[in-house]
Image 1: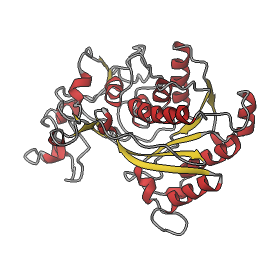
Image 2: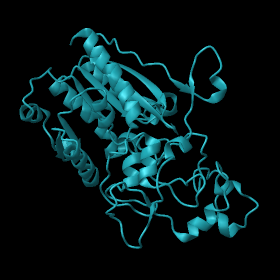
Image 3: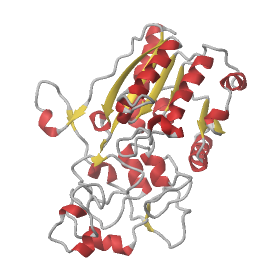
Image 4: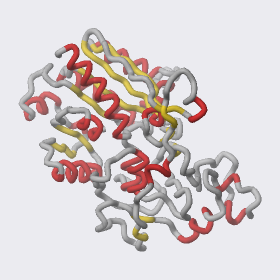
Length: 356
């Protein structure tokens, strides 16, 4: 998120992050680009917003923008949807605590769209989001929200996320209309640009370095490292561009390994002329023409990161539960920078217009 917000013209004073590898990534890029952002490695629940105001030499009500993307796994449609029973779900409400103490002019939040239907203590659909909105209103903020498709704004990824913008008093914010659309919708009344395929953004990259057994951290700064084991190369070699292994019913059971017809994202080979599926933490998608997983750098290209941005932390081979995020997961968990910039530019326009 910070890349897009900064590109929109905001000076970011502080960032709070618990994951050690994400913190290393944030710190590395802040130092490289000489940003004076304070990187705070901490559990946000342990921080007092009043102390943060004091540390940043700010008064209540002076901050232009408070923004964040709390962990979304507890609300994700792809997960167990434990909502507030998962302690990560409660982190969403930390932004209320900080907003009440700091009183920023605008609050900007990103979440999975599953938050809209997440159940609360009364087992009612939408209860968590309803509570969140009421809590915002209770501290005198007026929220607006919309589910946004990243591909609609030039990101080559079919990623839908919920964005909430809240302001004190009257909310004059409006969500900018899409700039891109599927090709079949580009010849109508509106002059949309066609969706961008991943082939366009993957062009120009060199051959990736091979994964070395037992090695998780690499000297190669651009993170262009191929982590594919030989057996997975053999399996994906049987999958045509734009398809997935479970659809290859003509292959033997040994190759498909019990995959069901619902396993549409496992062993998925992307298509050069189409946007990617939503990048996810649990699975790495395959290159459209080569028999390998996409590298972290290719994930970054698909997500809209600049090539000057560096990742820190391990490059792990595949899936599994880990306490700290590897490089693929850092990208999959993040907000596409171009989309964050679109939202932040609208917020900046609102602040400039109202001179607040």
